[in-house]
Image (cartoon, protein in one colour):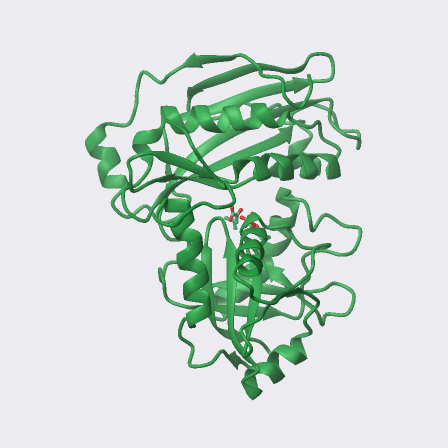
Length: 363
Ligand code: PLP
Ligand code: COI
């Protein structure tokens, strides 16, 4: 199978869809990652057969052998992307091919088989089409979660010879409970997320497992998210538990940490592209935490924001840490953050021209 081949999906729509009135109730205020749709995609891979048994069927629990490699050695990767209801009544995906590509980069890092990009996109499209009634009206979206894990029953430590790829979907609203309010982040000086040569650039479950204790510490300290520093010097700002980070300087320029040990966010790349296009200076450079403190105090640093598929663009109002807090400006969302968010969301929703061809309509 090459990068462009298609696989046949068998279709077995559920005979017990959630009733329309129950679904409407769930879509009122879905929050993030709690409301799931009626269907899912499954495709199997084995060394002998490659990708096979593509199916779109009723969402149901998965049966796994207790010795399945994922349960022991965590060989798992995932993606996250959204389908939007647009003003003109169409449904669209944003840069989905980038998710397909990153999925394969993650697969390569975790010694897993690559999935043809066309198959990834076909799986996502099919699920959006069959579960389109689950896309919330207004600001919400259908969050798609493609993932793959090792299913071979074998306790030796080596790459599995069998995998299951799946896509599930969740109706979502705002990622943060406070909605549009600026978020507060916790600076972790005890835990790090990824080291040089590690898996920081891959979207693998293990990265998130390793972030949970730091995230719990953030919550205990009244923060929404954790911000990680580099593993070697505990000095350079890297990213949040589930988002990239940007800084807006007083001269209007943007600064974001360089790729390497962080996830190459598609939102990050989109913001860099849009900012460059509008003539803004953007730098992908390391930023030390002591500089963040000094620049916030001197007024050289005006705004900071987090960005990612789930959270879109979230203004950072305050940073808390054991060594004292940093308050960003007056703690409110700044004008540059607001403008970047409006432009990005506008493209996704069809209210702003899509000059880079990022949006693909399906149905
Ligand atoms: N960094 C981490 C650790 C993430 O989990 C995410 C979310 O996917 C991002 C950054 C942002 O990536 P993207 O913009 O592709 O969603
Ligand atoms: C995403 O934005 O898609 C993510 O995977 C982040 C996760 C913390 C929900």
